[in-house]
Image (cartoon, rainbow, N blue to C red; front, side, top):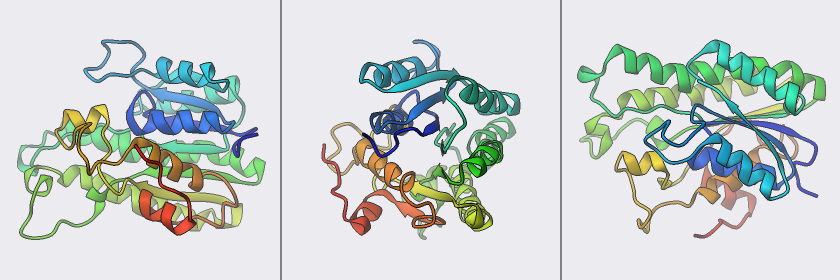
Length: 265
């Protein structure tokens, strides 16, 4: 028996990285998981990983998962994701908004197309998906919404260093918006027994995306294993929704607060 037995979860951006790790962990804990992202086949993206591979891994381990191809930049695709989840798995109890498209470019060089795409995938999709799952969560009498954020949401120190000086402004704006959305929605949904939280890794997690952007490497001794984020996500998406809601949490600090061992490499 897993702590998520009988629950249905939607995890976006789950073809690789943190999203895939969360989807696999939720599946191992008994949730039926809708694995959502754009990448459906090898070669669709320069980065490794597909939604089919993530879903297959969950099913092969005795869990239940379906792969639902979704372009989170498109409102109609977001609606279809929820509709297909309900049709194939049932009404969702858990929503994890993890999908991201990220460009690291200085403001003066940022194109309007890329700016709009980043906000559509990270902010607008999180907002719309949350509204689309509320009816089913209210029907269940409880629910959990988790928005994946980043330390980039914090204001940079001056004089700047690293990506703060080289082009993390729009990325940080998206994550800051996600955090304010999370705490505000948590307040609005308190009476409905629906938890809403934002979760960031304490340290950079080696994923195909962060490695592509030269933020870390698999050999980096200071990097955080993706299993740490998956464990923290599990803690925020199980148990009493009112016990943990309205939080802007960091993975390792949250686990330490709850007395949960931090997964090792």
